[in-house]
Length: 173
Length: 419
Image (cartoon, rainbow over all chains, first blue to last red; front, side):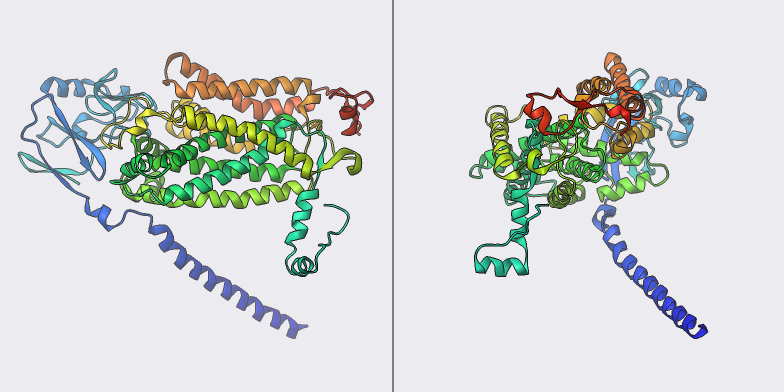
């Protein structure tokens, strides 16, 4: 009896060991098959874009493409900045101060992804109920700071990583 | 299925059949005993097989001329339309074929809902059918992306962004689906690959669907089991094949009507504008066959909630056989359920209509009412009505109502007696 039990245990060990090695092997093959779908080197190489902002008048904005996505660069007037800062945080679905959405000392420059946080459409400028952007796809309203105010979008429009290379150039990414 | 064992006539055929019994399979499919009371709503299985083959054949041909690259795709589709011999015809058959495929599948699904074909012992047929339906939606969506027009691009953006609603990992999943940081060339490339793959997966599931069907045999308009095969059934060939062929011809006339007279009526003119990642079209709508689900998505003022509800609208169908508590299959004998069935049909049509309209005002209200009814129908109406309803007497056998000239039986037993 004890001899038989020993035999079974040995075989069990072999089964378990085989399954384990097999699972590791299968996993090692499956992972490259999954990861190949992530952005490749060529896509990652497009990670930064430099933009000349010297021609943008106050109150105007331009749209540039960064990583295949539109980025809005808006040079805001002092009234627009004041309007954005007068909003109470309690009125915001995704509370965030306007000061936290711009670079200190460069308050007039709003640089954000022109992508609705609902399902990725490009919002239209100078439209909607809050003097900012309006997404035509499913009716999200953004204010002059790009913050969500009304509609299905869950969060404010995203601020990408960016820096001022010099007073006339912004590097996004 | 048939009781007699099939023996091929010639020696050569017998030699082959002993090694691979394909001829036995053929004989089974030919002799397959089919309820003799099947009506024209039962011809859509054959029609759908035709649709699948049509899509595969035209698709393979289109792939010989199409280029899956963001810079070239739009032009290559125009090249197919203008330069390739009969390219316009093949492409119009393929694009309208998708719509005809969905038209047929919706009739097929609602036929199943009316006559209780999803109920025991046919649950597995139903579930495989739903898997086919899901794959059809995936294939149709990816196919719509391939011309790389404005609707292609923004439809792809909106649908892939649905996954970004998933908490924590949503954004990583979306990036992974894209293979980029937005819908871009890698996305188009993989969509083409998958669009080519999925029809063959569907073909495999169709084989399983038919196999699972041939185990219990067809349901039928009175929804009762076959009592005596000799009296209640006819061989599949030639009785059902000829009926299917006639229905298919009528279907092909409608199909050809779209292809030759209004080939673009079911599409969207914005898709003849090349994709532009900087401009979203003013009014994004999916293809007509996805509109009810789109209406459900938009009826919820919350991103994650809308996405969950939209997927639930499809996945709830998987548990339908267990939500329906009625012992009677066919709605012919279910006076209360029958009315709710037609309310559901109207509800889905209305959701489709409001899905095409802007999500505001009365349309939003209708979308919400329609969404609420859709879920109530499956979660509340089906279990409760099945339990409380007093059904009409069902016939003794399939032969009886057929021979007495209608669904109203002369001799009947009460099903509510809980036999």
